[in-house]
Image (cartoon, rainbow, N blue to C red; front, side):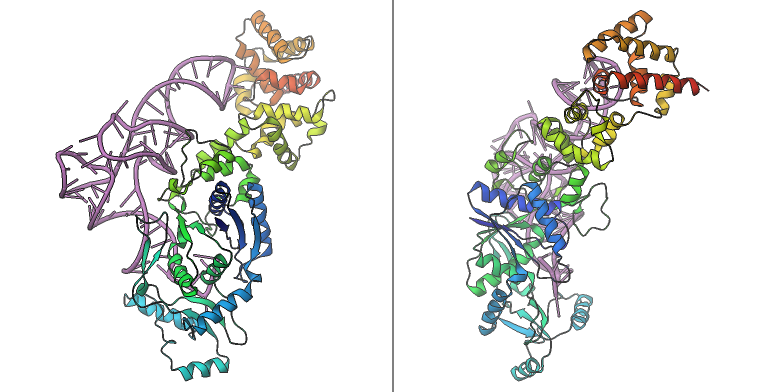
Length: 496
RNA sequence: GGUCUGGUCGUCUAGGGGUUAGGACACCGCCCUUUCACGGCGGUAACACGGGUUCGAUUCCCGUCCAGACUGCCA
């Protein structure tokens, strides 16, 4: 079993492409087959090396490793030329001389007359001598494939059809172009539909899994396989991934920047590799497992073309986020910390000097990351969530000031807390809790009345992880300093 | 317009001639609780419509409607 992923390097790898790559890879892995990567860069206008690099990066990040390649179509011209020659000699293709403008005019005419806008074969009807004269003169032409006038072309399709193959009417297809405009001396570049067939045949591809937008191409491609007398692979055309009920495309200009369609964009936002694989594996496919969260080896074992869905799938951001947060909570802590570090550094926080002097900075960082692991759904949320560990608050949440700081006797309370914590030994969360609970009791205050002002004083916020974990991580000196700062701030900013 | 493909809770889906139509995310409620989260428990919610076939259709068939893709000298 030989499968391939064949992206065109005209932009980043998007999530739909990643899912196509994943399914091909999964099937290859499951059956000990071969997964080939081929870059379809026949369009010199739009292909870039930068894009190729990005696509390879994204695949590697996802852990989708190819067994062969990457092959580049731009380096395989000889094969295509050879195949064109072959078809020409057999009379299966012919040169067509119309300019794009002429074609467009004809197309509009056809549409206006409610005719199917397929090529009218004007060049095929030219006398042989005329064709030869034009070719000799160096007139520009494209190669068109002569599609049979009658009959049907059946695409062996595992998904997008009923029990039978997917059937297309030849008469409705039109003689499609297989090679761009050129002359005999300077031939144009062959096109996708053609190169794809030549390569898949030469590379021995047995099974093509790709997006459903290629389904109608498949009919043309089958015609080409037949023309070459090559075996036709089996096709699986995946349902499309939709966003707000329209195709999620990398060409979509209106895409919301908060929800990038690229794998790299998601990575930069702090989506995890594990969550991304897990989530896209569920788009248009189901598995016999009860849970919807599973590691990739379970995925490989259970992937099955028969469990593919036929209808399009909407991309559910909520579910993706949920899975991401699940992995942040459940992946080995060490692994999460490792991945959070670049985000913290990119935000400009110097965690090494923020760590209490008595502590190993990296271990300390691990501790505070652990405190936010069940709150942050994206890696990119950690810097803001943890900011007060790196920089002492200089202002306090406005609503908190109003509701908490302006309560009865808060400055004195902060003093008392500072004093109590000074005497708390060891400076651990359990000891602090006992100490502050009893302080509350003596003052006749509910525990919340003690904890909330302290939280606000120390973090500047009304919400945080468990207060005592925070205090312990901050260390005694820093906590006392912040309590005193808060009290002073309160005295110079009294209730209006 | 033509060709092709689809249609089960809001979303992703399981299922399949007889089921209380199952799960997940989201949502709502309760519990836990020093805040915010996490977690636990529970709840609302679906077979597009009309004809057949059948003792019985959400499931099979046909139409309708709706949706999407393709209709490039892009891939």
